[in-house]
Image 1 (cartoon, rainbow over the protein chains, first blue to last red):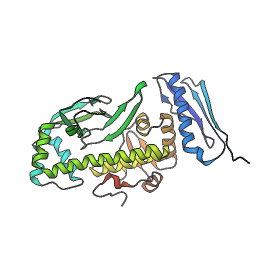
Image 2 (spheres, rainbow over the protein chains, first blue to last red; image 1 turned 120 degrees about the vertical axis):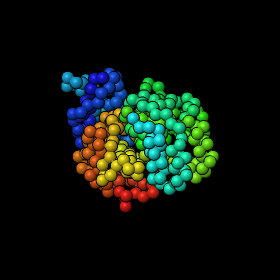
Image 3 (tube, one colour; image 1 turned 30 degrees about the horizontal axis):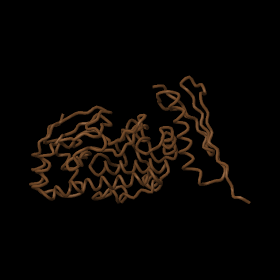
Image 4 (cartoon, chains in turn brown, red; image 1 turned 180 degrees about the horizontal axis):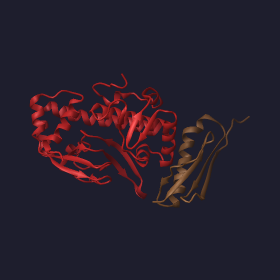
Amino acid sequence: MPRYFFDIDDGVRDLRDDEGVPLVDRESARKEAIATLTQLAQDMLPNGNDHVFKARVRDESGELIYEAALTLRSGWVP
Amino acid sequence: MSSAPDALENLIRKLESTSTLTDEERQAIRRLPATIRLIVPGQDLVQDGERPGQCGLIVEGWSYRYKLLDEGRRQILSFHVVGDVPDLQSLHLGVLDHSLAALTPCTFALIPHENLRRLTRTYPDVAALLWRETLVDAGIFRIWITAMGRRSAYGRIAHLFCELYLRQEAVGLAADLRCPMPLRQTDLADATGLTTVHVSRVMKALRTEGLITLRDRLLIIHDWKRLSEAAEFDPTYLHLKRVQTAA
């Protein structure tokens, strides 16, 4: 299986993935990226009003093949 | 390869980790007929929907129970080590409602239901101990539900490491905060309902913060207090005779 690398910025830390994850294809990598962003959001969102989570996926050659961002904008109504 | 009587010593050791058997009960367990079977990693011992006529006692290696959903999605329900009988419920429920597979090369001693039933009829105290095993099994499921429903990714993984260390310590497979840990990140992901990428991030954090090292299938816990606090870990649900580490 090809290996994909997921650099994830959770709004606090931007971590580069040097290990990678073996996945069957690009589509699985896309789903893995989106699912990871939603899971990070579930753990971290209750602690703030605005937040952006970003994922960048690289293939084995190092080429950037996919990008995703998940944004929360919220606030009390004045 | 171990012979059947040697294999059954693992069951005696497991039952005696929380209780004491009489000589007669021990002899009766040693007399159980058992067939030795080796399963390679990923292979099923029994599958969802089957009606096994025997129970599998783990003599060597790790196994796990799981459910498969469509598109190959897998939920791991529990992990099992030497001395466990992961399909003990088949003794009374008939149809298996999940599958049981080997995580590592795994040796099972297969004990016919008929002989286990005779053992439990003759020795009610042994029946009570086996019942107790299934109750602890259910207790572990309760804690996994709690983790999956309410804990953070970090808390889930920290909790799982605390559990797997203590369960191995209780049956003499681990000591000094070191234990075998053959789980790959995909196994951890399927056991905690997380993506593999998320598990990888959490593992990196646990390592960077100096709580654990996981290398060559060996888990080293550097700081039990901080790890168990991060996990909000309370070992009561394992109902071990003595909890050495937490004490």
